[in-house]
Image (cartoon, rainbow, N blue to C red; front, side):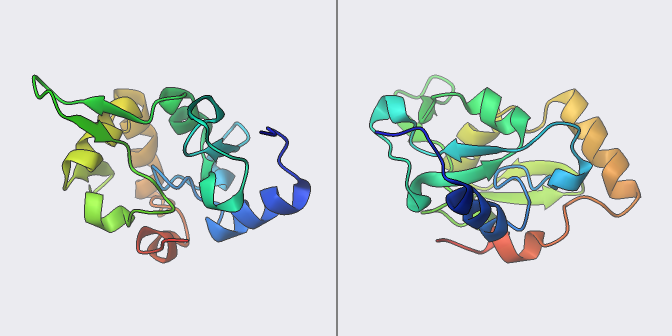
Length: 148
């Protein structure tokens, strides 16, 4: 298992995502920090460094996700996986209520919780960007209904 992501693979992942975080729809041009090529299934869980297991993620989503692949919600004893950008369709698990990302499913709820998608500072940043027409990021319509 290699953690090295070639420049060509990095470019392909970035272009496929339209330069947006595939979790929170934040555009890289609006970020102060460099976006990450993220292993959807982490190496720790036998994920591979291949196109079908890589996503484009802002530093916040990537860092909050860490090596998590799912969680337990509330007192439910059922394990719920996190949103998988290559297998799931964003708009089936989330919807935007202004700048707030709302869950439509347990996968959406689990992902919102683990990735802290609606943390106060993140909401403030998205609300300011939305006021100037920058959130959701340009091209988001193309990725919210995409798999691949």
